[in-house]
Amino acid sequence: MRKVSILIPCYNEEENIPSLYEAIRQLMDNNSQYDWEALLVNDGSKDRTLEMIKELRRQDKRISYVNLSRNFGKEAAMLAGFDYVTGDCLVNVDADLQDPLEIIPEMLKYWEEGYDDIYARRLSRGKESFLRKHLTKLYYSLIQKMTSFDMLPNVGDFRLLDRKCIEELKRLRESERYTKGLYCWIGFKKKEILFDRGSRQHGKSNWGFRKLFGLAVNGITSFSTIPLRISTFMGTIISIYAFCHLAYFLIKTLIYGDDVQGFPTLVILILFLGGVQLLSIGIIGEYVGRIYNETKHRPVYIVREYEAGEDEKKSN
Ligand code: UDP
Ligand code: MG
Image (cartoon, rainbow, N blue to C red):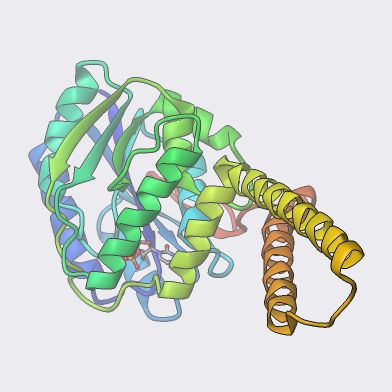
């Protein structure tokens, strides 16, 4: 019998856990042609999430969990999940039930047909602010242009991955992670399913604008060096312009003599150049920072406890 793992990263999800469990229990019971495992990764929750997960595990041995030593972020929690799932495939879902579990049987059907990565593409994005919706759209079109492979828009982490994909994802251990891009980068035979994304059941999204902005910058800098090229390009254009200007003023001064004029122009030029230079340094800095973080070779996450299968605790 083939085994399917459900991977659920959880950060402060105590309100969602009961209905989450109810939903996955139904899913597991209704599809008993598979062996099931639900791996919950507790990403350093500050509420009762961990206790609730442990309680569920006492009732149902199909539940297993990894408890991280602190909050490492969703991207790291997912890598922990990839490392610890034992199934022949995994389905990645959010703890807040924004992803409709009803389409998982359809995903499994395509998996049986031989697809490796069955991803769900959002038709609508649930309740979100106008600004967030439009910024997301702009971002996706930007990143699409900057990468050399297909970066799928409106596709999140809700997907079924075959063991082949899991093994490849496990080899990508960069610490500045942008998993959405990694799924596309590894390739494999993909299949799309369309769905409507619901709104969060309880609590607030853990992604504030600051975190999202960080993720967006991460997405671009992890997969593209085009921003560096843009700053080189800007630098070249401005240098050429400055050179022409210089020649113009030199000749003008030689012919008509020197009268001090054009102070505002000077100020504007200085400010403009200063701005461009700072921006370019900032862009370079983003990359240097990433190089610095990667060279430390720190593990992406640290595990405090892991329990799975019928056995007792495996590590502490
Ligand atoms: N999450 C996590 N660590 C974090 C933030 C979020 O494991 O630091 C989990 C969270 O519990 C949820 C999933 O990642 O299961 C998606 O989080 P959220 O609903 O906040 O994100 P959104 O739906 O807004 O993308
Ligand atoms: Mg959510």
